[in-house]
Length: 337
Image 1: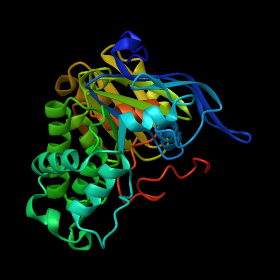
Image 2: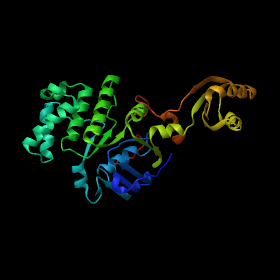
Image 3: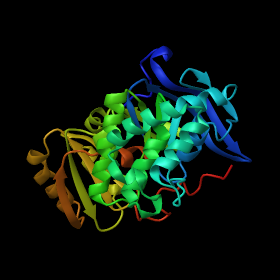
Image 4: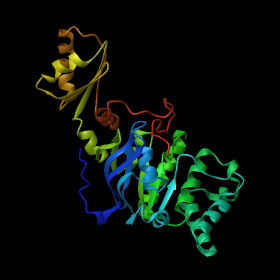
């Protein structure tokens, strides 16, 4: 797991250096160095209150940093916010759609706000109708749209002016699995067919795994790790043995760490995560060792690493999926600007 971008700034769509945002005595973002490459989908994850929402607000010029620099599409986000806004599109958690307009009317208004001519708007709507798969619903009132259709229309509105960078803040939150998969398809098409760089936050780890070329995890205001999903998962070991115990797992972790086959052991409350190269051959040895220690095992499982395991290692907690408390999609302890 590496925090080094490994690329020259000229190949990056987004660059931050020493990015800090303070709210009084609270440091919500603490020295984030971020580099998002042109043409990639970058997944940005973090627990509630980690600073994720604050970083996004600064990147899209809705919030000024306390310190550090931000370059978006080659422009200084502090000194040239207007140039940044013309270069990006943003579809945030709550789609700002007028339900008394038709889809076509909303996109037409959006195009006019960006200074497009009537002919340019008509051409863009035709292109986006096919790309986003809205079809004849474009002539219907937005109030009649399903949740998935509203999300796709919001994507179209963010793309009307041909931005080079698209910010998607939890684009599938609250959608059913079928609608979620359709949004995934649209995001891939936007990236591959239009060459748009996408900065994506999500509350679904499988979404980041499926879509993102690279993933960054922010924790306590700092970028804790980043890399491809495959590399991040590989860093946890070839196999994972998950043990759920009665009582605290700390003592058991120390005993298991001494075994030569064990690569790493993480203890979180009553759960152990043991990284090994050959879990099938070693799982019985783990059970025997715990039995020798007189520790009661409630559950013992073997599996390959997931992004949730990486998240647990970095942040000390499992990733909160939709429906968890605090409210899904909220950076609950991020101070308000």
